[in-house]
Structures are given as C-alpha cells and as structure tokens.
Image (cartoon, rainbow, N blue to C red; front, side):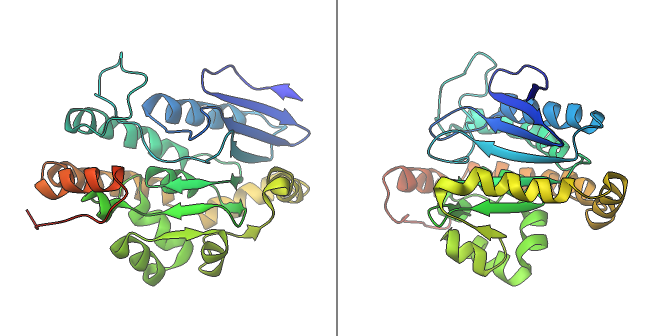
Length: 269
C-alpha cells in the first residue's frame, strides 16, 4: 500500500489499482472548504497516477458525512458547528466552487456510505459513480426543514441518479431514507452489512479496475459528460437562493427546530 500525498484530514492510499480516499474527521465528518479542497487535491493526484484505475471514497467514524461546518466564516475558525448567517455568507461560495472540482476527476469512484449522509453530506455522497451502503445508512435532504434551498449541486446530481420524481419527493418533503429505502429508488447500488461495507466497496472498485483502463475512462467520460459544468452552474443558482433564504425568519426557526429535534413552526416570512 502506497500513500498518495499528505493531508490534514484525509488519507489517500493506493493498493494495486485501487485507491482509497478516507475522510478522517470522526465521528460525524462535517465538511468545510478545507476538507473539500483536500479531497479534490487527492483526486487530482490520483488522476495523474497511471496505476490508479478506481477510487473508494470512505470515511472514519459513525457517519459518512453529517453535513457542512459553516462556522463563523473566518479562516481562524476551525471548530464551530454554528450555522451562523455570517459563516454561511462567507463560506458557501468558495465551498461550492471547491465542490464542483470533485465532479471533474477522471477515475471511477465508489462511495462506502455508513451512517448519515445528510444535507451537504448527501451532496458529497453523490460525487461517486456508485454507492455501497449498509441498511443503517441515512440519506437526508433536510434543506426545507432548515428553511433553505439545497446546495452542493444536488439540484443536478440527485435527479441524475434517482430520477426527477424521486428527487422532488426527497427535496420537497425533506425526507430521510435508510439504506433499504435508498436502494429502492436507485440512490444505493449495493446494500451490505456494515461489517462488510468497505470490503464490498473495494471489491466493486477492483471489478472495474480489472478492465481496460483507457476504455473505462472513455466510457465514464461519455456517461458523465457535462456533469462538472452542470454542477458549477447549478451551485451558482443554489447559492443565490440559499443566501436570501438564510436571512429569513423561517430559516432561523428551521435551524432552531432541527437543533431541538422538533417540527418547525414556519410563517412564510
């Protein structure tokens, strides 16, 4: 096993023709601009490595990714999970620009999804070509429960995976799906016990890596044609919608309601 680069919050290793990029912010793996940039940098390095033919994107801890850490938006803020308006306004633009990079890589990606993939974490789980998950996984599009618009390119990526009707159901209702429910709509490709999750994701990556690498890259480029550009365009719209909605009274109520684990008392203002 070979290390590919050195990072603060992830590891990137190569074994045979399969790389593993592991997020290392347990237990919940909240992401910020720095983490997304690290993943994108690792993907870029692996794109340049001819020995790498497929990538497993995985995470340590209880959750795959429980959402974004906006904090205060200051560069010196490394620990806050406060969903402040200041942090939201100062960080989402550059965070989404970094997120768009993730969809421009050339190697097939298999996501090993354990626990929660919520909000922006759902968006991150949609970066891989395929998702291997356990029945205990939870995929949540909780944006309307927070009083805001979806982000991270989900407007484009979710319908491409599950179809427009299933995507609308998740986004309008703010639904959270377990692994079996997610598999039923095509959001999960392989359902497996949590104890075998990483091994099954690696097995699928090896199956892909056994094939002619130039052909796989060519087929993938055709199947994902225009995706990174569509995500970049979508995030511009998503950001504009999120910014004005974040300033509403409903967003303040939604944030409190989610934190207090209760339904929101929304007024439409």
